[in-house]
Figure 1 (cartoon, rainbow over the protein chains, first blue to last red):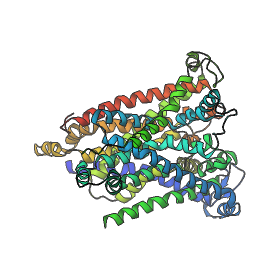
Figure 2 (figure 1 turned 90 degrees about the horizontal axis):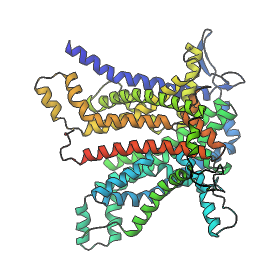
Figure 3 (figure 1 turned 30 degrees about the vertical axis):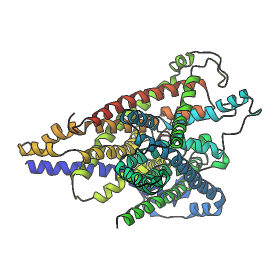
Figure 4 (figure 1 turned 90 degrees about the vertical axis):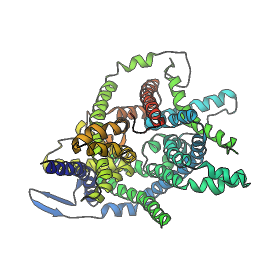
Length: 296
Length: 273
């Protein structure tokens, strides 16, 4: 009796989340592929599913129109794709440059200060990114805080254009994703055995050499983890290009949104989403591959 | 010799903390500005906070967000706990690879993709089975529970893996049955991570704009959707006020939570509660 109960409990624990996730995560992706091969039409919903089964049986008529459309107007889609990768790449770089000294400082400070600094990193991580981006607009606007201060101090006469530039996107990304970079870096730096550093110092290594030959190489796993954690959500970001960016900073996440909500071209939105997934899978596969190389 | 962090690194770190905090702090100060013009400081006033309580759209959106947040994060925590147990405690089982794939892929999926794909599924289901009829609070809740459980699973899994298993083994040796061992020994030991998982999935749900925008229907606008449409019209002292309230509430919760967690971590005996 008890055996059967345990057996049943085990199946329950595994299959309940598995079925839910297949139903509400896998199936939606499959349906999205289906829609991306569907014909767009003026109706509700605005497409003719490639594969469908209903009262009049199963029908399967895939069309490649949506991908051909993207191919035909490739300039409209290629630039957002390149922008997504470019802006996400440099955002990741800036995050890394700022996060490394922060993580290092936190890892090397004494317990009470370490706790305070960690909490200071965690608090923005938990608060809404939308609201923090809004706060940033208040700073960067033509009549925002920074311009006000600069004009008041007499440095400039007319406001500097900071919104809708690459600068505003980078500021938003750093503000949004800095904690995600700090945490894995901190985790790898805090585990670093300080006796190695002391040994190197005793043997006469200079501080820069210690950093280059010991600290940096040993924190590579943290760097890779942090870069992935920042780059992946940054590529697909919608809120930041929508609120802080202009037409020059169009990214794929925003293109999906516009195709869907404004143009009501759902099949094309689905096709772009699939391209976005492809962009994200590449660095993950690369990191996995690197991981395996490192072990062997 | 002690290898101290160089001064330059410390300065950069302070700049980093400044970037994280200065925008929000300035916004908080300006939420007490009595002028409707955002750029001009016209004296201290709490009138924008008073006006929030008369904004019916905002209040009903807040109610919906709380409802969705509480229900979806509760589902997320239960399912996340199941996933964590399956991975840490069951060595090999049919579907392990599939489960690890579907439980980790939502973590890296862009919100716009998740939202769009879920909406397309809901529409396909509606045309095929007639459920869900239209989109509303229930579809947002399902969507939030789905990605929330993957985050919850990660949080609980870490704790479950680090946990000392001697107490469980002792209880089993003393003849306790598995369900009882789990409820009276394991669950209390991983309880902090369960709370953390619930809070994480709650804040993810409460802050989510993109997925909710796709799977919501008319009349089911959550708080982020309402705030986003207000932000598009420009900076206003009213949004400053609501943003200040939301950030302060979440920060207070995080502060309490992290003080508790860090204090527990510092104790010598990790199994002591």
